[in-house]
Image 1 (cartoon, one colour):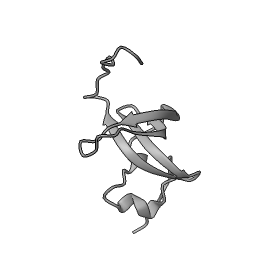
Image 2 (image 1 turned 90 degrees about the vertical axis):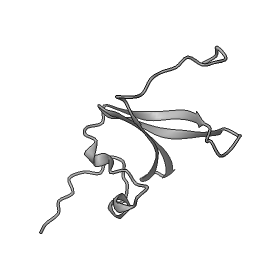
Image 3 (image 1 turned 60 degrees about the horizontal axis):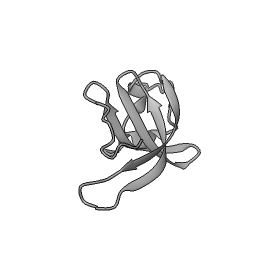
Length: 95
């Protein structure tokens, strides 16, 4: 049995794609838009918000946010399904 690997859009080492925390982004289709965003989020376990620059990759059905540890290695932190996502106004009136 032969296995062909055509491309690796995020540079994730192929052996990492089998890890449970990894997302096989190569199955999400073609990249529509790619760039960086300054992302802020707060977990349920911690009171302090986290902030980090992340790679932002937009696919037809998903928005992937990944931290960049090296120029050729990304760790997917968030995968947002666009079918159920919504945009909300900020509660304090500022962007």
